[in-house]
Image (cartoon, rainbow, N blue to C red):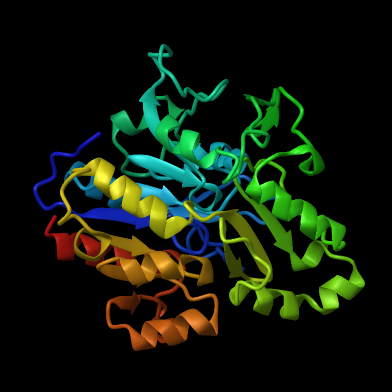
Length: 356
């Protein structure tokens, strides 16, 4: 899969806090806005929060693709969450979930004779102000089987986390046709470490994940929750983490995944797939920029030519942006450029830089 873009620049974007925001008050920009810059509500999360994305954000993302620039969504979210949100997200050239563990490409809904097709998935994109008719064409996803075959080896995540998925009747969600294998019965380096943490008393979130799992402070019993900062520090220092695994921390959570995964590595893999596998001059530092907002984006942000931050969720990433001139914070509370406005500002800067 290669692109015809002459500028040879790809754009990788995180989702939550970057394209999708969770404002406390959305009264000023409603679905009835008459300036073509209304907000679209996403389905509620498990905690009841409802994210929003602006129609202008969607138009700007499409303008990148119309200009021949590969656009990729890269998120730590579970694959089932990604599938649920697809109708509301920008159309992309690739979709990455589970912190780089799984890669999917859009595919015509009319052709179901292809390996890697996601069972039962048919996406009907939601209409937004200014969208083209082609945006509304239904599509499905095809998984990158080369990537999956590597990451499902026993020294990585193994095969036991994968389940066959199907839409739940009467909803936008997904359930499993095959019951997920319990963590204690899964094979692979990732799940061996998960079993070790379980024996220490940690509650692990593996629902909807095939190649990663999450440890959330909020889900731990009192003693482990009280000492969670020490656990976070150990993870940051890679203490007791097997060499085969990577991890990222953010907002009181730790995600564990195979070392070959991670946002930086998957961006590098896709960049070479978009342009030229064998061209050693192709690199993230020269040919990619990203949109991001938090600590689990740091490796990706540092590797890219430029990183745009529509929001900043931690002092550590704010400090890093202050030390690295290629990391650009576009939010400005004093000027009212926050949340979706800051996202739109970042995308407009990218379009100017790429000269589209």
